Length: 73
Image (cartoon, rainbow, N blue to C red; front, side, top):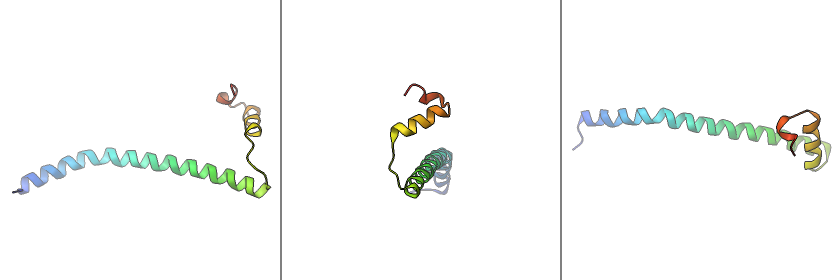
């Protein structure tokens, strides 16, 4: 039989675990949200201009803006 004290111990252990899971889920959701926002911006620009995605043009633009990680591409 579960006593009141054991219920509080169970709730206490859940409370200790829950904030870490909540933070993990929050950061995952925010990363997905940010990535989705960027893709929507890209897709809207392509649709508005009536063009298709061109990777070489994208890399040229990154190099023109001196993006450090794009210099090796």
